Amino acid sequence: MSSRLASGEARVAPLLGELRYGMELARLLTDGDFRRPGRRDNQPAVMLIPGFMAGDSSLRVLERWLRRRGSLTSGSGILLNSDCAERTLEGVESRLRKLAARAGGRVVLVGQSRGGQLARAAAVRNPDLVSAVVMLGSPVLAPLDVGPMVLGVVRYVATLGDMGVPGMLSRSCGQGECCAAFRDDVIAPLPEGVRAVSVYSRSDGIVSWKACLDPQAEHVEVRSSHGGMSVHRDVYRVLSAVLDDEGS
Image (cartoon, rainbow, N blue to C red; front, side, top):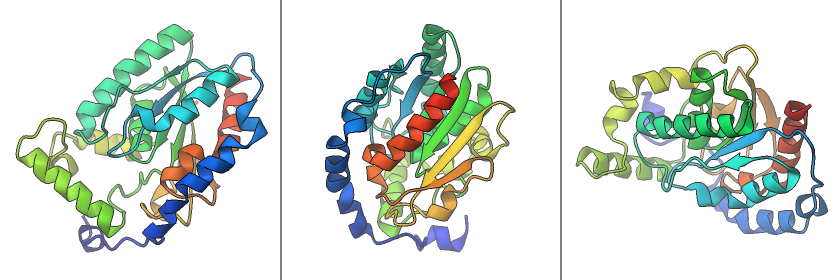
């Protein structure tokens, strides 16, 4: 771990910008394409994976929109995304297998922040089940390239994990053997036939946007807060294009 990351001095936008979430949600809710997207045929199934310290409920607005468009959807089963990455990924993969079986085909994974890291690793391990991965503000190149306040939360959670509190990651997840395979898979080359799209924002107040520039992925910039990517109308247009491509 570099001294910059260890000290929490990642270059991120001011945290105050995260207060845009309410405005971003309001703009989305007044958008006609969001309210009445029009049902499409042959839409791929979609699994949604929430960000750090969030659960499936944080992506409910997005999930309902996907269903209105015609996609079969599934959450990840995560109530609070704070556990060891390898343990969490086991649950994600189990849900992925069930969703692919129900859909009768490959699935699109959409992950926000840490959820995008989990989605990418799941795609590397299950290319027969995943057709595309969309990562929303996911710092796959440097998972700890975050602002000082966020890094403080990570350290606090890791301390709880070191103490044996259930459902919490520990320091060994970042440097030890328990998540070594996960750390490798997050940055491993994507299998042939698996598309990846990384959506990032230079005004992200949580993670460094440069850490989101996965060289294996298509890069799409939006003007969004970090938390607001799941309710930002420009992100929905990106997702719509990806899903239509995969559906065709």
